[in-house]
Length: 92
Image 1 (cartoon, rainbow, N blue to C red):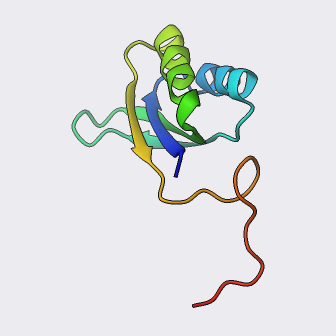
Image 2 (tube, rainbow, N blue to C red; image 1 turned 135 degrees about the vertical axis):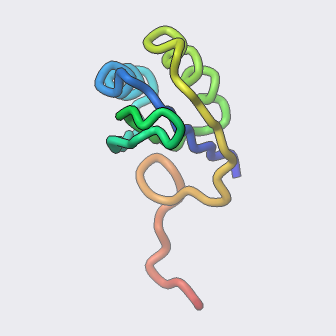
Image 3 (tube, rainbow, N blue to C red; image 1 turned 60 degrees about the vertical axis):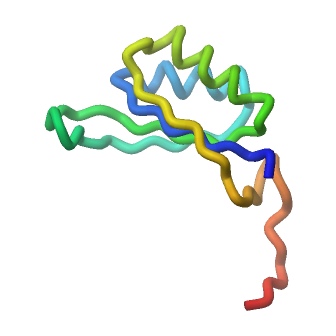
């Protein structure tokens, strides 16, 4: 699969989200999270993009929050808007 899922831990979720939406036109979800080590509230921003868009994600986050923590993972499969259609008939 060419899909990649970016997980971003940031103190600036609204700015990161706005930039990702404007640049990549991909859906973005976010949650308030608590750091296990620091106990501080932060935000987890997640989006799934194509492999060529990974660089744009990194650049956007670096511009907005150089202190963010970012992981990029290979997604086994991505279905829905912007990716493969979700199949109606799925065999078990």
